[in-house]
Image (cartoon, rainbow, N blue to C red):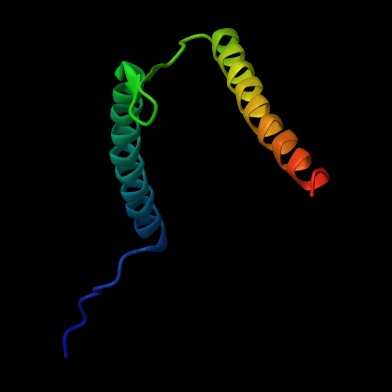
Length: 88
C-alpha cells in the first residue's frame, strides 16, 4: 500500500475556495459593469421610445407627469361609467 497523502490541508482548501469565489465575483462584476454601461448609453427606452432623463429630478418630474396623465385617463373613464350607471 502506498502511504502518499492525497489530502490537502483545510487551509489550502479554504484558500482555493477564496480564489474561486474571487474569480466568480470578478466574472459576474465584469458582466454587470458591461450591462450597466450598455444601459446608461442606451439612448431610448425600447418600450415607450421616450428619452430617459439622466438626472433624478428630471426623472421624478417625468414620473409625476406620467402619473397625472394616467390619473386623468382613469378618472375620465370612471366618470363616464358613473354617469352611465346613474342614467339607467
